[in-house]
Length: 261
Image (cartoon, rainbow, N blue to C red; front, side, top):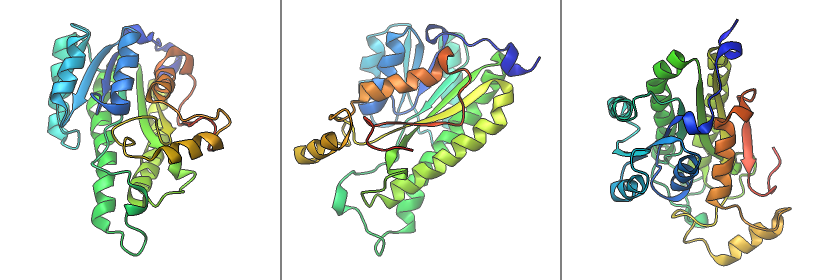
C-alpha cells in the first residue's frame, strides 16, 4: 500500500501549521482562520513581531509567534525546531505567504524599459523562502506520512493588467515550483497547491488603492465585489483539509470570478 493510500488526513484541528508573514494583512487572516478551526499555528514574521505576539497571546498554547527571515535557511530550521519543542509535534502544513518588500503602486512601477534585474531577483527571494520552508518541514511531514503545502500566488499571472513585472514573474516561478513539487512529493502523501488572489479589500498592500479601482474591479466580477482576505483564507483551509486529499498541483484563483484560468 503506498503512502497516499495509507496516510491519514488529519482534520484541521489536529494540524500544526506554519504561516509565513502570518501577523498582518492576508497572513493574519490565514493565521486566524486556522486558529478558529483549532489548529496549532506558528505565526512567522520579520518586521511585525509585536503584532505576531499580540495575536498569539489571544490563543495561549495554540499559537506561537517567531521572528525569522524565511529567506535564511538556518533561521527557518531553527524556527521549526522551536515550534516542534513548543507544540510537541512537527509542522505538517506550510502556508508560504511571506512577500519580499513590494509596493502595489500601479503606474509608478517600472515599465519594461526601466525594469532592473535587481528588482526581479528581489522578488524571486520569495521563491527561495518557499523552498526553505518546504525543505525544513519535509522530514516531519515524511515521518507523519502526511503534509500540506499551500503557496500564495496572484491572478496577475493569468491576467497581467498592471506592470508588476518583477512580482508577477516571481509568482509564476512559484507556481511552477508548486507543480513540480506536487509531482515529486505526491507519492509520500504530501500535496502542494497554490491559492491566487487579486486585489484584496483591504490589506496594508492595498490600503493606498483608490476607491475607484476597487469599484472597477468589483463591477468586473460576477459577484460584483472585491475579495476579502478572510475569503481567500477559506480557500487555503480547503487545501489543508481532508476534503482536498485528492487535490495537488493546482492553482485556485480566488477573485470573485474576475479571472478564469
